[in-house]
Image (tube, rainbow, N blue to C red):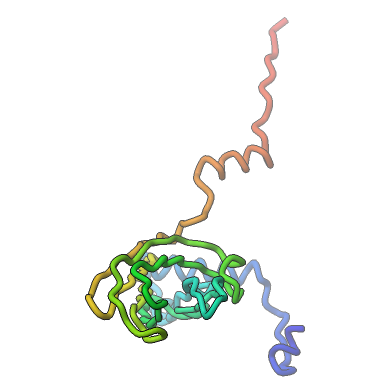
Length: 190
């Protein structure tokens, strides 16, 4: 399947996946270390990319559950992308639901957070009324801001990269389920 995907190019099976991961971690550690003596490692450029597409839920005509991608997966970060969105006639507030995923249906993706842009100015139907700005900084912190184009009113949410990850206590519990601590045995001296 991989050969098909890469236009029948020959694949290299000489690479051990475990060693590839270890090499990548070693290069990253060398980049982060201030005491790296090998300058050839410093010449290797590491690029961070987002693993899944990021976007918001929108409504077109009567379909209310469409995932509109703002930042496509594999986009390098830090980055900032702005996209204009239209509102319905008479709409004064807009719910902004931020998702990550690849499915065109919003609810089949992972909800990262929500906020409301209030006091939207009236505008003709279908004309962009709000800009939604997705900004990812070097620490992978996502800030989503919605700005009314007419009156400049705005609101935003900050989504940290550890959203949805296990807590330290949950990890500790899982470790003990897999590897329970050894039982203590009292040995009495006879």
